[in-house]
Image (cartoon, rainbow, N blue to C red; front, side, top):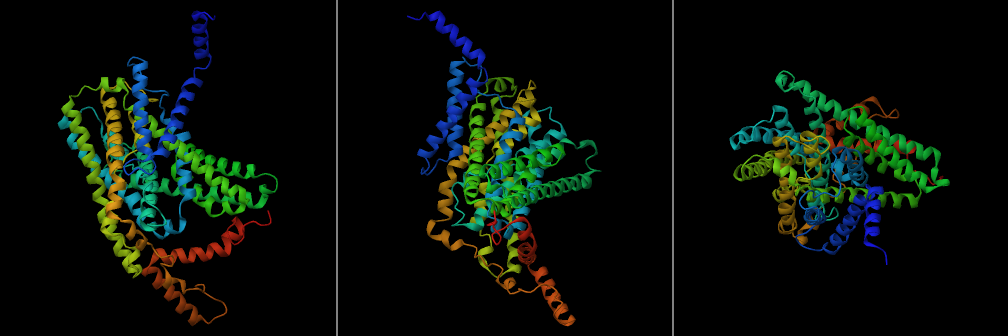
Length: 527
């Protein structure tokens, strides 16, 4: 019979030798549990996988609190660098890689309005509102830069709950708007947050235009780096034909080049999110056609799997972090003040979201009506409500930005900063659980299944432009004919800029880009 002292000794040795392995193993086990339960509840009317991960995280946190006698609710310690370096890149890259490019670029103007201008409007509303309300609720000690950061933190949306309900084949316009705006919103929020970190608030009034200029400079440069990385990867795969010898090398090159583009952007103080998103779009547009059929199937599943695990990991941790007793103990405010802060933040999110969704939708409808008589490209009022609702939930990006602003490697000893962390966690939990629970019933009420098929944006939305099958200028025709065609094209550009630009870009793409970088017309059969 083995003595109990020997078993105890072995247990201690195992714990000391595998100090890192044990918590990681436990976390992976809980992740597997999330996947199983999420699958079993997939058809549930109220539940989605994000909510499942948060609830399981809360339950796991309670169990850990009981085991550790109230000392900790975490299996792993959160670090915002872990999020930005390892978890966020696969999520954003997969979003770019899986995006329906035709719908995305057909609605590019509307998506960019929601994702860029909307973030500025929402940040302004939340910053001004919190600056006015928080001191009245005895939350003192926040600086002007903190309030600007709060505006960006709570402007970062999480559209996962809504996208799990919508189907892009049934509602292509709505899905494209929610998906595209969600990705651009997160990217813009992070860029704006980083810009706020470098801002001298005391000279903000004199440097406002410079601040906005720097923002768009970083946005443009980050996009260019992503496009360059995507094109370089596509050319390498097309020129070297890795598939002749190994599909593994093809997949490895795509993954590593995408990750390299993200890290280079971060090293150059650019936005890695924007860079890796556009890198994903370019890879799916060119590089995907330069690899073998096996690699095509594998890449889609590998990128989607990595993104799914990262998202589940984040929501699971949020559930555990909600029970971090140390942060709650630091808070000096009364329960009434805390409840007032939570309520005011939720209200500001609702108002800030509405302040841009409905006005910008009216502008988008006006421009789309001028561009085309097709009513399917209009955003109906019911669709506007869904777009507004989809952006009410806060998630991983908000948590990561809050930790980056108010903690050092996930730890803080300042009561005010600890209060802001708990505020963020409560808002994320409330918005994900309450708004997430109501998402499926709301969408089923606003978009009955019988009506969804009628809401398809017809694929030839630019039928009037499809007739322009000749180039702007032709050496084989007279000068008068060329001038007439140029005037007609210019008129089309003024009346419907998005469709016209898309048309000429597609012709340029087929004629010059695809033969060089790869595409469906030259899908690399020689490899």
